[in-house]
Amino acid sequence: MKKIEPSELVINNDGSVFHLHIRPDQLADNVLLVGDPDRVDLLRQLLTRVEHESKNREFVSVTGYFNNHKVTILSTGIGTDNIDIVMNELDALANIDFNKRIPKKEHKSLRILRLGTSGAIQPGIEPGTLVFSSYSAGIDGLLNWYAGRNQVSDLDLEKAFVTHMNWPSGLAAPYFVRNSESLEKQFHDAVLGITLSAPGFYGPQGRVIRLPLANPDYLSKLMSFRYGPLKILNFEMEGSAIAGLSKLLGHEGATVCLIIAQRDSKDMNVDYKDLMLEKATEAVERMLIL
Image (cartoon, helix red, strand yellow):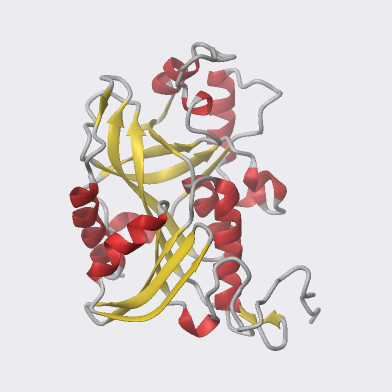
């Protein structure tokens, strides 16, 4: 079996993986991802006992126990480029022998749930609503860099979207990936649909400040897209990479978002910390049911 070279998988002198600063023994099988590093401090109060804490750049983590179940809470920062780091390093921690630098004989499947904030684009999805991403749609291009991209993507859904949007050839090819169906069963009472992961907060999510959009009807086209019962419900910036890389690497990955903005009615809730703590408690409880 080919050894993974030090330049490809970087391991720190303390035995931790390069960016996350976590050692294999410090990672739980259940991982809750959040974007904001400060949110880790907010959510650590859910844990009755803490075994490990680390901090490097935007990657802040705490591993401890929630109702006697071991859980790692990890911040990712913003964007699918950061998720590329997070997912590959989480998988390495679970499935690479750091001493021999080769894959372990037995594959471990992690349960990875992102709890994020999001803006709804469909009418009636009000701030405070929990939306589970049955599908994550990536317009960021990340998954296109990996072999097997077509095998984990819904190509018919992708084709329908490209046709409906008259997708510009100068943009990255969109991809649509089904999130973990076993995790979805635990959120059956949430609002379910397609979440679009954008490579930016402003133009890629149809916001106009001073710069006009290259495609002025972009947002209205997104709102009118239908594929059977599915429609695009909300924007965020990480879920597509979590869904796609989870499928490629053999993990149960999904995204559930607390809606804090309503793009159709122009409503926005910036005071959501208490509600986020409540939803995080609920999310962890549901994740651990499996």
